[in-house]
Length: 366
Image (tube, rainbow, N blue to C red):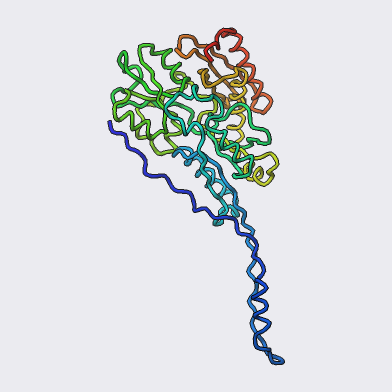
């Protein structure tokens, strides 16, 4: 099976600084005009009108530099252009690439290099010191806390939350032979995989989507699991062997959701983001992140959770926490209203229930 890699992603528009108001002509220019030929009485001359000052102010969008992160930043840029004519003007939007700790260290598991905030800290710093105006994040990378003076008021419409199974040798996880090696950087995927298929071997498998597919095609591992949402945004769905249903692989908290943060005192950016916000997605992530908060989950804890609007118009949530080897799994679920208060309470209650059932010694590896 061949794995095609995408063509180079669209490049961001050239960086254009917001135009400042035109300055007055220099004194020397005025002096030259005064020493020119004198006008005769009644003579008419044409005087050029001064150019109107530009009011375009650049809105700077901060993002990681991976192909997937850039695809999400371009999506944000395009939605802003479509919603606000002034942001469609040349130079009104600028994409700023910021390298994070998670991008710099690829040889070690995420749990070994710092835990929370590996893909967001440097972007948060740029937001706080004014180098960017808004920050585009994969919501599953965002810690349950936000830095002081920042808010996250906007989620774009959520993509498909399911995981994809990719293998050149098997059509399904159940077809992988004993000892087959599956590559995954996600403890959540590893734990759920080993819970159902303990005969498989799971190894750390980091890097961007394209590099993981390349390693797979080179035979480094027999299979891998990736987020369906990311593959769709990168136009790489042809690589998928099978989409895993929720009952087979519960997704990560906030998987498939894009979050956009800004400074709490930046009312202009807040107005832009309010127009882009998808409320069902925002409420779902509130619920799922409350579940994560209740469990005090770290990068060493396999945690999954999903909140959705149910048929009655309310919210349904299900979540789990597992041991890294997949031998122990504890699940919780709740139903309630589709609103801010209920969303937070559902996730928090389910998390507290699961933590109680797991017992105080369950998280000793974290």
